[in-house]
Image (cartoon, rainbow, N blue to C red; front, side, top):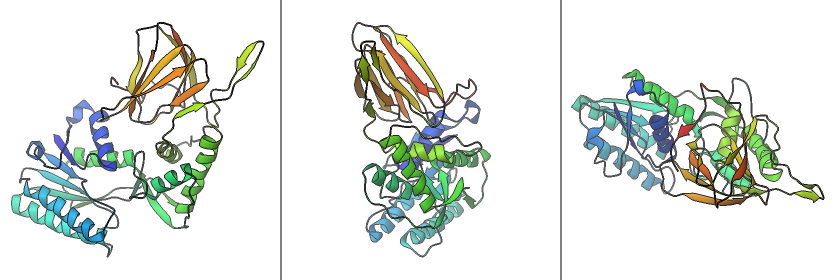
Length: 361
C-alpha cells in the first residue's frame, strides 16, 4: 500500500513520514510518499493522510487556506483511494478551527459518496514532541522555548489530554493496517495532566539539564511520559556542545564527563585514521559522545534533510555532544592520529530493541 502525506514538512507530517519509513515492518508492505503542494504524485497513492493545514495567523486566512487545501486534495483523488483527515477532539468547537473542520468533514463525506472512495476523520488530542514550533499549536513547545530563553511563563491549572507524536503515528499506522472504514477514529491520549504540572516538570529539566549539566531521572516503569517530555524539551536546544571545567595537578587532569540522576551505559572505542564510526540515528535513546584523545570530526544530519553539521572536537578539552533524536551521526579522526572516544547512553543495550537505524550521514 502506498501512503501519501500532505504537509509532510510539518510537525506531525514529518514524524509520520519517519515512522512509516523506518518503523513499519516489511510484512506491512507500506510505502510512504511525501506529497508536494502540487499533489502531482497523489495518483500513485492508495491512501492519503491529510495534514497540510495552517494553524496560526489571521482567522479568515486560516479558514480559507484550510478549506482550499482540503478541496484541492479531494478534486484530484478518485474512488479507489482513501483519505484520513487529521482533525481534533475540538472539531465541534464554535471557533474558526471547529468551523473549517466541520466543513472539511462534510466535503470529504460528499467526495466519498460521489466517487465511491473512503474517508475517515481522526479526532486528535493535544500533541507534543520534538521539532514542534513554539507559539504555534503546542503549549509544551512554547514552554520549552521560553524556559530555555529565560522568558516569563504563565500557566493555568486546566487539565489536558496529551499524546506523544510518535504514539500518535503508531495509532495512525494501526488504523491504516486495520483497513477499517469507520467515519471517525478517536486517537487515545497517553496521559492527562494539568498545564501547571507539565510546566513544573519542564522547569526541573531546565534546572537540572541546562543549568547544572545533570541528566534528570526520567525512567518511570510502564510510563514513558517523562522521557518523551524530556526528549521534547531537549529538541529545542540549539547549542549542543558543552565544555566542562577541568582540574589539573602534577598527576594530570580530572574532569567529569557525565552526571546523571538516572543510569545507563558507558563505553569507549578507538578509531584509526580513515575509518568512520556511527552512521545511524535514534528515535528514543539519549547518546553522548566525548573525545578523550585526538582530534575528531563529529557530523550530524537530520533525517530527510541534506544539511550536514560538523563539530570539530579535541581531546585537549573536555567536550561532549548529546546526539539529537532523528539526526544520523558519525565520528572520524580529523587528522592522521587515532582518537579515543567515550560514549554513554541512557539505557542498556537490548539486542531485540536497539533503537538504532542505520543511515549514512
